[in-house]
Amino acid sequence: MNAASPIAALLEERRLVVDEALDRALSPDGAWPPTIHRAVRYSLFAGGKRIRPILVLLAGEAVGGERQDLLPFSCAVEMVHTYSLVHDDLPAMDNDDLRRGKPTSHKVFGEAIAILAGDALLTRAFHLLAEVPDGWNDVKLRRRITATALLGQACGTAGLIGGQVADLESEGKNVEPRDLARLHQAKTGALLAACVRGGGILGGAGAEELERLGRYGDAVGLAFQVVDDILDVTEEAAQLGKTAGKDVAARKATFVSLHGLDGARAAADALLEEALAALAPLGPRGETLAALAWHIVTRHA
Ligand code: GRG
Image 1 (cartoon, rainbow, N blue to C red):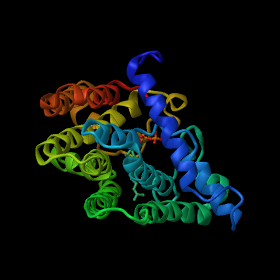
Image 2 (cartoon, protein in one colour):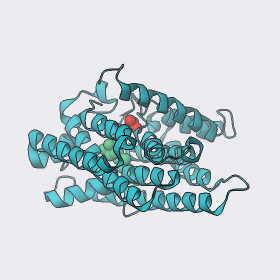
Image 3 (cartoon, rainbow, N blue to C red):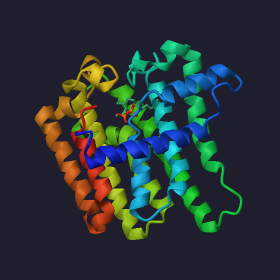
């Protein structure tokens, strides 16, 4: 992607907004006890792309939502995502040394603090969503509660955790294409889809708009993981900021191992088409989400 392209500028602007909100949502660096706050900030500000919180903002803005109503949910999804990465990198799981271009949390702070940093991020995400200003009306409260429940579902046993369990259990085994799609949808797709639906709900989407956003979120969520599978074999660690070639080394079933590189690219392209078709009736209001879908499918990191 050209750094001067409109989508690059838009992503950079939203990334800065999200980073500032995340900074405000956390205890300061020196808070007691210092180690846990250092560990939380180390992983959260290690240089993630912020795709999930940006999806929340763009989905909410597409239906006329105000940024201040979207930002707490944006921060919460990034906290949940970062927790999942910290825990996924632990020796008991993927046992990785590199994440977001830096040594993983357990390499820097030790395993116990890395586990607790993940726990702290997950806890703070839901704490933040429960912090509502005095004087909120029923409509705002209901939207916040609905989006929060959606996030809880996406990171529970039907989503992130279920997908991670299926992933761990699939290593070295023959996996059917349908089961792989289900695993990917749970491990990766559910959280990304919750970002889009949650953003839509918080932005005040009507039923038809929400249905459109939901279809877009499902397609983009799965496409994100298909592209992740492709990048694992086509890109170097320096580009990815994490160990490359891990899926092959762990004999993991991926879209590439099951369908080949061309098959995986075709699947990603088909999902992009699905996402764009879902947005089409939104007209110009869907343009930034369309650009983000295109960016997700054509990215190199
Ligand atoms: C530990 C409950 C638990 C779940 C772990 C997130 C996860 C499940 C595993 C990490 C490995 C992996 C391939 C996850 C799929 C999701 C994914 C592609 C994560 C990377 O997301 P990016 O590229 O990362 O958005 P940044 O660092 O840019 O935020």
